[in-house]
Image: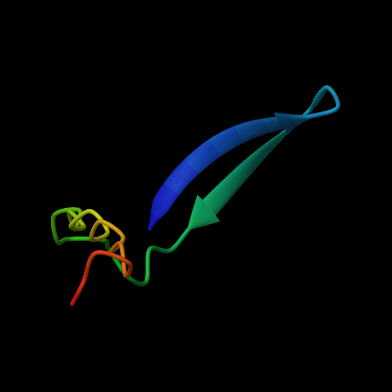
Length: 43
């Protein structure tokens, strides 16, 4: 449980947030899309 103090339109609120799923893996690096094939030159 994490506690935060936020302000909305000049009014302060203290809130508690429960973290239910942490993002623990490293970001996925996607491979670039393959280059388009020039079908006119393919025999």
